[in-house]
Image (tube, rainbow, N blue to C red):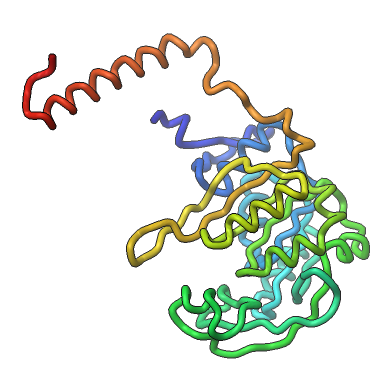
Length: 273
């Protein structure tokens, strides 16, 4: 694989943008940035320290966008306030769901692991410990926030809320109609439901990023699929390579066939035919 194929660089004006690796948030967003996609508001649910916005704003991929950073844990409020003061936008210490009300969140050994799933659930069995405590937080919906804060579309929506994604999407019917890109953390066991919910709301898979594996048997554990609205389906590249590269690709295929034949001959213990 060539260096170009491993990396992507956002084509920004006025400065040399750093390269970002494909297979990461930055790689996917750089591809979309280079296709002309821009956002009015970045909505990050389960933002923690809001590194997602800060990092991609620094890389030049979010020009003119402001954040709405949302997390239920007040430990993150000081840095969320700093980001708001530096870049504008809003933050909320609270949760989002299907409707207004309250929600019990269960806390783990690290604040990142706070989840709406209670003791004895599959979530905590996968985390290899039970929750250390719980607290009740106010819940609103993304549609309510978008109206009350007069959020400027188009939206980039990121969800990382440890099992609360489906409820958040059910409370975001209006927001999703004005969202261009969705990034969502999902465990493998939750992927089918997450994918179905986004497909039903007009999104198709664009990229798979941040792939993580179990520390036990190294099988697939969790990852961040990136979705693109079908309204922007015309931006998807259909060709596997540009036409002038055809001789290069054909030559590479022939070399591969030769390598395969040599390898098979070695495995069979005799010389190539």
